[in-house]
Image (cartoon, rainbow, N blue to C red; front, side):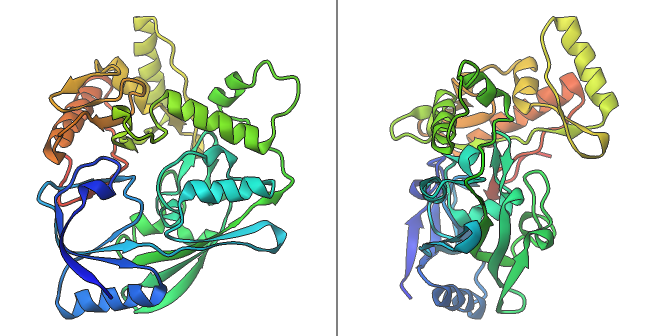
Length: 349
């Protein structure tokens, strides 16, 4: 296995931020994953597993260990609507493959950057869909047991933007393959408000491809579709999670909205809780689209995305994020939680 030294990480992240990896390796096979893990173990070197780099903020000092880039390839279309994807496959390519066969279940997840291997880790979701609803199984390498294991969806511990892979078992497993159980010939999901608005004048039900195209169009209008040369795209996507709060907290926030004469739309969550859009909270706390602190700023098209306006350091992004979080907490008493994975940095407590 080719293990290189002092490889810059900024170009491997959508934020375009990050110093060098002390050591760097790319795994094209499961065997190479095992080899790299053992290399790091024998030398007592810290290990960080890198996928598509789309939900990541890396320290300007880089990572003083081995960065293992998962580059396993292969998409298999199996019987009964099962799409099996190697962890290093482009997620958007997986979506397009499902559309090619008219299999429903991924159409609203079009345009999301990253790789298939990252989808179960974060329970990727958008526009009314989550991968938790279609994942059949996840294959992974267990760093503790030094063996490959498989999990059913029920064993993955899925919740909003969560799984066992980024909570209780964070850092234990390296995902190598994901199987998605889709619906051949199924109808597209049109539950999300933006999609309802987009298709409001249609006389016929859109196809899966038309829904995926609409999602990409909407994402692009918000700067959430990654396009080369677009400053709003130098981000980690949504930086904060939409907070889930008790109904009485939502009522208090609604009272503030009513006093200001602004509309607030909330969404039902589990166990009687309510989900409030983080973007709304951020804007109402005084941080509009285009707000900036030096080279770090908020996207000009989507309040939820923090962007590298050109030459921003990780510290710049963290400072802005801390200011936003403090402002929202002061205004509404709600503490926003970040979505990205932080490597060598931390958001102010």
